[in-house]
Amino acid sequence: MRARRSVMVMAAALGLVAVAGCGGAGDADGQGGSASKGGTLHVLSSLDLEHLDPARNYVTSSEDVGRLIYRTLTTYAAAPGPAGGKIVPDLATDTGRPSDGARTWTFTLKAGVKFEDGRPITSRDVEYGVERSFAAELPEGPPYARMWLAGGRSYKGPYKDKDKHGLASIETPDDRTIVFKLNRPVADFGSAVSLPIFAPVPPDKDTGVRYDSRPFSSGPYKIGTFEPKKRLTLVRNTHWSPATDTVRKGLPDKIVIDLNLDPAVVDQRLIAAQGQDADAVAFEPVGPASVGPVMANPAVRKRLVSGESINTRYLSINTRHKPLNDVRVRQAIAYALDKEALRTARGGPIAGRLATTLLPPSLPGAVSDDPFPSPGGKGDPAKAKALLAQAGRASGLTLTLDTPATAGGQAQGEAVQASLGKAGIKVKINAISSSAFYSTVGNTAQEHDLVIDGWTPDWPGASTYLPLVFDGRLITAEGNNNHAQYDSARVSARIDEIARMKGPAAAATAYGQLAEQIMRDAPVVPFLWDKAAVLTGPHVTGAYGHIAYVGRLDLVSLGLRK
Image (cartoon, rainbow, N blue to C red; front, top):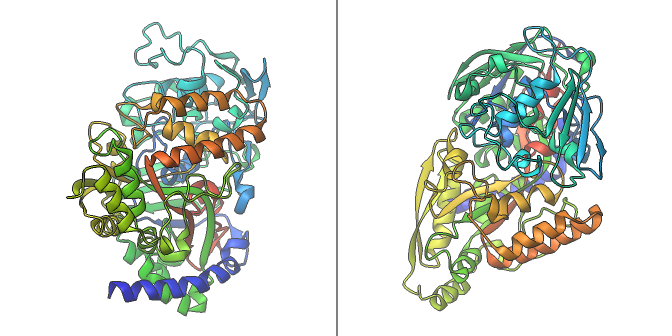
């Protein structure tokens, strides 16, 4: 039954690739008709929210939700396709003004931007939001502030800053001006400030780790109620002004996000689209078992929105664990992995293209490469066994795989288990709650041997991919992004050399070459370049897949038809 179902999914998906753009994907008003202000939008999620605190929010799904609640200095454009990858002004009047050879960046806040209580957002609120990201209590956010701000390596955050002097490399000469002093030239710092750590936080509203459940709003919605692991209800922030915000539409009166739902039930509800589900969208792509029913019904198929992404999914291999510190064992895993089975577990060809290297083809500098080929991407157990024998592991080995405790995570875990088993590698599955998954595998003491993993660059470019995931100097005890715990002095030195390159084209080419070098070490095994096909209700407008959110719907553009 499993093999037969895979064939059915693949056949249906081949048709889907050709027609997905005919529905909401290419229509700014979703399935047609005009959106009106008002109503309640329902978001049906099979996931939990990892973090809402902007200092800790570094997972694409949670960032998609966070964009409804708070604003950043810049942000992604609200647009389908490659246009969504453009960085545009948000709280700031522009995307930043570099000086001193791009070592100093100045931003001016727009007039009239306010928090949910009506007070003006000031440059000091933005500064404080950035400074919070240095606190040891809030370890999960991106490392750019620590990496690039002068003095960032030694600053410990506002909770340990007894004199409250703040970080000297952030200057706020007046309420609307903020200046960042960097320790090196950073040409794309104007893109970095689109991340949640650059959202404003008023110091008197900061509740430390408890801020995660009630961040203070600077966007069109504020938190009405939040039942962790169950439901987040967002209501209007009446002090948000669309005159200051060219990105967020703010159309529904209320947005209700139901969490941890059964993914099959989500699909069933949106296929039927009865009652309030006509005003609903799925948060995650349609599941493998639902592709056939969706494609068989033209009315439902029209409500399927397809979105591209710049995400690569891969299997991380913990290089600090024996015998995974032996490159031959890692290469054996790379040969053995059945990528097609993993893609089928995620929905078949509609889930994306089989990945053969780290950088997706849409990223500048990406090169065609496949150092561990196998027929049809289904794995090569014979080559894997030969490498294991060379490494003295002819009798096999046992490894533990960390997966999200979701139906999709279980299916992917079983695909890894089956394919590596053919090469004599026994895999035990360790399921982790989706709300704690990245926090757990980002703890170097808690991570096991293998991780179902992936990475979306923070903006379109390898500079926000290879350094963050493969620079061993950035490995941290908590909030670690290098789940392979890969530490190569040669790779780190090359990352430094590329960072000093002045031309973006030369840097992109160099990153492409570095990706090839890293692949030979096999710290990770790429298996999928993502895209997403997401179901929407018939009353929903403005639906398109956003490249920054792994092809998921851009929540800030959704509305409901009259």
